[in-house]
Image (cartoon, rainbow, N blue to C red):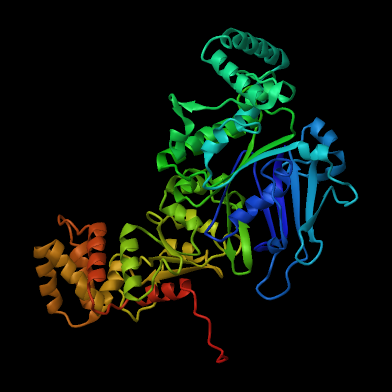
Length: 585
């Protein structure tokens, strides 16, 4: 049994939002203020209702649109699938028929609804819970006890959770792993230990001193019988006293990162051994906190295994929220769920719902590194072919007084013409954020267009153009980025000085050839060919190294630099427009 779908209505940023989950690990990501914490709290509304992690809502949690009245209610609808026969019997009033996409026979899902309404102005919200489609079918306490989840908050102090206590995770795990005969045997051993050690000093003398002083203070009538308790007389009290040490040290002396991992291991152990509940889940906010990238990878690899538990254990559904591109880069694409701000408001997107071309999804998984995983956190995106384009486009944006970071624009290199792996993630039917694709028209090698020439697109460029829609726009150079830069006089000057800095001899030869030419097109061709089409038996200039040095020189100069028109158009597409002044003060 696992949570398949969660529908949120009238809660915080969400007027209405529906999320679908998979069995095992679900990684919920997105930019800051996208709504990840609201999703976590929506999960807690039901899954932690019978636990110490339960959530209480107030009037301020009701949705408040930018223009309009606050919602009068918040409603959460949970749909569970994969129920076993006994679970269907336990939740029979919650069952609804459905036909799975990959199956012809009818199956049953369990539906639970939690509704919060405002009881009175400024008062606490009134909560109602029911199952199925009819509000008369109340969600009983027994049903709630069947839904077991543990919530781990961000920036937690795991050491406190590892300390002895009646409700500590260690105590719960001890209860889960013990049978009554084992508890009785332990009780006998503890009793024998007490009888053996209590008569020995300093325990005996301490007990006598305390008893004598107490009796002298209160007198024989009021004095109580005092006795040092070394071992509790019942298992529950014994379990509440068990703590954890790390390499002989107190747990407080251990690092926060490792304590987090220890605490999660204990929680997952208790949940995976819980055979009394129908559903077990773990909700973790920002598990990367206090963990360096290597430990993040270790943790994520372990969380992936919860889908296939060891013999004698049960599967646990895990919900993780993260701000870490490193965490996302390591995650399976199918486990990712992105909550973001679309033009129409908060939205959700799962890459597993995308229909990729053959082999494209696997290719994307290989290409997703820490840098490229940033695309899931961006509000606007520029895709370029490679590192050379990335260096130069960033520099030209800076020269155009465009602060990419403040506009939440990320530039991602697709490592060649691999746009077809990335673009399915965006568009009208996917993540609805502006995406500018900057690439080359790539006409024939011997074609050198002028600024006024019309575009001649290669077959690859034409295929790429077919992916355009309201959110995806392609911007093509006349030939290549370097050639189009050379068509602009201000760029050509810096390209030549950079070439002379890298290769003085080549630079002087190219400069002399350019001096004999009159038109911008002729000079652009001479500069471009002198670097990248030098002819047989001559080594061309390395594009990546040249781009890096050119970008540095562009950053360093105070002179104005004019970008090629197609780059200016790309910047205009992704940079948000300033609101128009209506003249009203």
